[in-house]
Length: 307
Image (tube, rainbow, N blue to C red; front, side):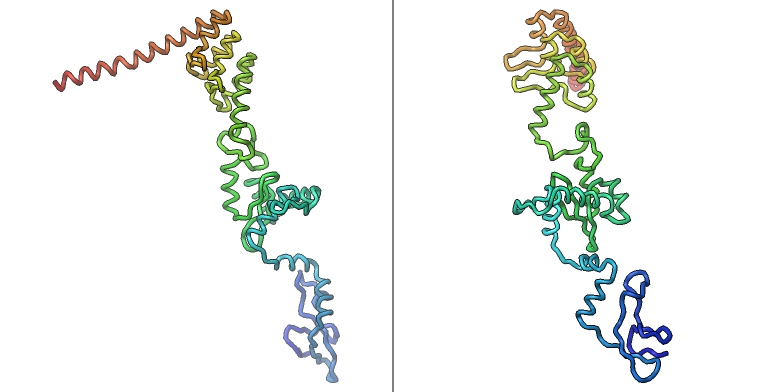
């Protein structure tokens, strides 16, 4: 048998020659129209019409996926699309609801599970965010309820090292990561209120938890009062001992009115607490004197030597 045109194969005396298939060798998809000629076994290929070409493409599995892979967009457009998914389907530039919340949820679930193809498992382990890779090499990254980003893979890895955006990051006690979702002064005020309330109520367990979380146990409120002030005012000896011996907070900070924790303890009749605070303060003063005296003696000896 002979070939009458390029990429046209003859199979026996069949009148349905083909050039193979786009997917997996299924020969029935990419058929070429041919017309027989008087000579037996010889075919002449005829170019297909646009209608038949469109009909043939519709038979190819995944042809819509191939068409979508041929789309050309800019990084700005993709970032707006990612931000729309992060914003629950509302476009951040127009404020228009373009996607339903249920559809956004389903899309993000698919992006998290298989948006990076064979790398989806490792990406979910390292980054833990919904993402979609493209043939250009960039990644559309979605941080739900925060923002959408269109950057590269290395950027995604570095992002979760600085911010606690990973799906399973600890949002309360991640001291080494930043959380831009919290307001700076709001979070600081909440910590101060929680610390002072626990000291005032005598909750030693909460105080230990704050200390283990790396909280500054000596921070003050707007009146300059510390947790030691409140614990001394209420007579909570266990809190006072914990703050002075375990947390090593200053024993005599002054508030707005010039009162120290020992003054507050005496004012409210907690004399045992006041005596303990004063004893700790005197020990610290003696320790400072013992450290300062040798330095003074060494300076005096050095002056005598030079003289």
